[in-house]
Length: 395
Length: 137
Image (cartoon, rainbow over all chains, first blue to last red):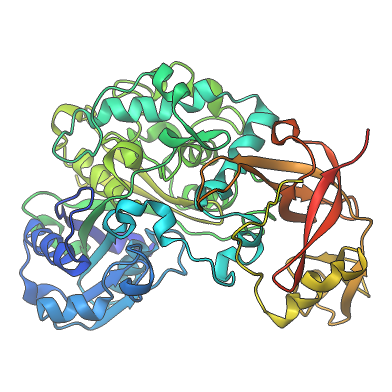
């Protein structure tokens, strides 16, 4: 074993199913499409796959399109022979499934893990919108202390973070709006993948209808149907990958402080701070070495919080960093969410961001390619759950 | 006063939190407090997270608090729902002792971070929901 387990594993393949609004296809159908393509992209055959890992696992029936098919369904659909499988949501963010796969490879439990994340939230919400999937029963889980007071949607949990950031640091909606506006510009360079590609002006952002102050419609990601699949392989497989492997330089998985929506000491950083500090403790690379970043943007404010937590700017300084948008443009100091992120590319729950990081490091991102990209940062989650990966081009 | 609790789920029936949702029956807000080290607990737990003592019991707080942050929910998640203030308030009894709640009893656009509020209770779903109203200034 290497000094750091993540160095024993590489991401050898990645692919996606059709992605779109209300595709009307089953989660398993989409998953099998993406899985088959990812296995081929890794230069492997089904018989090589001996591990499966997904976030969150569980039953898709009761979770309104949020969960994909559980590992057993995928194992059976592809007739895989596995030595290890796992589906879990109690992880350091959605990409905790990638970390778990790398751990399984490093410890020798398996050699090639199919990791997937499948969502059918767009179809689940259908013509009724999000209200169609909101329960009115007794509050449970995350909702115990928020739902009874109308903390109905994650937007209600994150909007107070944005409000507090604006209060403490003077951050403005104009500065926050640079995230969706810039991501939309990037999305237009990936018309096959992005959901929204029409140009978005700052004026249109500021005029968009409010959802939960200060977050408007364009601060919220877009529910879609789709699956992203990737293959985490033993590092020895790297030379055999037809499209190039990506190295995992460091993971950030820490859980520190009070990881709740309302009790965390500093609501303007939350779990992203622990994950970021842990990530940088596992590598000699520094934030200035990062060529391109794909930061979780389930809501625009989360990408802003990640910018600060990861040290791309000081705590409280994201507003000025974003001002005008030049820093996060494709030719800026930190090209950000180069496929449009989830705000314009669709809510693949972080996995579209991983796929884009891999495309950038393979120098296969076409018109949106960041020149000579060698180091990419991916973050997932926000609020009380967060994880981060530092990826490098295989040299 | 607008009804902030229209179409809301009932609280959890976890036995640890039952005292909290019933506390307002006499108009008093209570949190668990450690009898040994004095630490206030929220959400409820059977042991003090600071000293691990099991000597924890509900104790009244003043009911005064400060708005730490908030949002005005505008999106009508349920038909006919009015915009409402969803807030996190912090109590003077202990740094970081906070509660997610609603601020009611004033125009929604008058709520501010740092505003002084005090508890009031709404009786609903066999529980007393603690909400907060601005202190008279």
